[in-house]
Length: 439
Image (cartoon, rainbow, N blue to C red):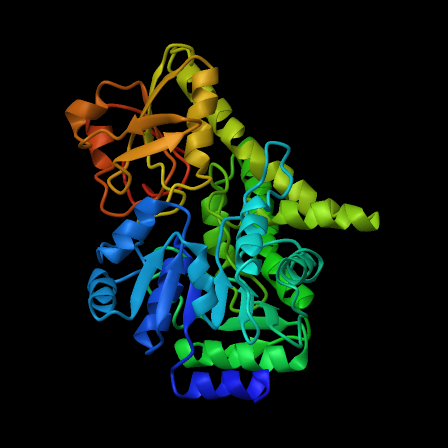
């Protein structure tokens, strides 16, 4: 039987064995969805701690329901391993590993490369490999395909199928999860695209949109996040201008979004965070240079957004100066270190950059975040204040709102008489504005 027909038959009767490489914010929810839809699923990760937690039915990802994971493990439909030899037993494997930047702000694809090499050593005829990690256009066909072919001796399109389907994970989103978010699929060859789309239709509830190639799917993902980066850069620049002009940027945005067409609201802040928006434009600008092309608009927005932590500290210093207090030696409390509201994820959080800038200026810093009791930054661990009370806040000269968590008693800071630099406009409904300054 030909590869295509064999795979279709396995999808239809739920005998296709699924694999997920990387059990983080993207991989674990995907593995759970595969197992929930009746497919035997194996998760692969080099971190033994994650492997052990999954096999014990202990969840560590916010978008996964604890009971779902425990039940799937108990029923034997989901298990994890650090032994890539088990790749030989799967029919479909999705690569969901990090794609960070190196110290030179260039793509660091070593996790993708290492994962592909490990898979290639165990690749067999009739398998499907799909890259989900966000990366530069061309990665699937220029990097992944040659590594798989060289490492296995098999030929893409004849012996195995290869595709790219970008992850679309928004931690903390109460409406859209992995299961119901539309999915884009691009593959090497029409047969591969058809079969890979069929796999995702079998495990996800969202629409599956097929494009003509992996490069289109890779560029589509970069566009999604660059779109946000550019628009956030625009409002951050306008926020700086509005401050000089004595205009409230938040009120300007609220007024603009009353227009029912042609405008989408984006908001300023102390910088960009998360695993995609701050990083993806660098992947595109790096790849563009290969073609002698400079992404000038994108690079400008990146420069603006990258400067926001420094600008935040500059504004905070001027606020303290007006109160006749020096920034050097001041005690500053950061309210929130997660990169977005009401989640525990602090990857690339601008709050950590703000903390670093304050310390460079000689200030002492601490933070309060009910979602992140401990965080690690540049090799050092930091702990949150256990509670945000007037007594605890009163020990500081200034509080800076860096994450818009709901349910936080921001009024406790004001009751302590501590001035607040509100970078997220969370205190917009407070009537007494005497001790509040907004970004």
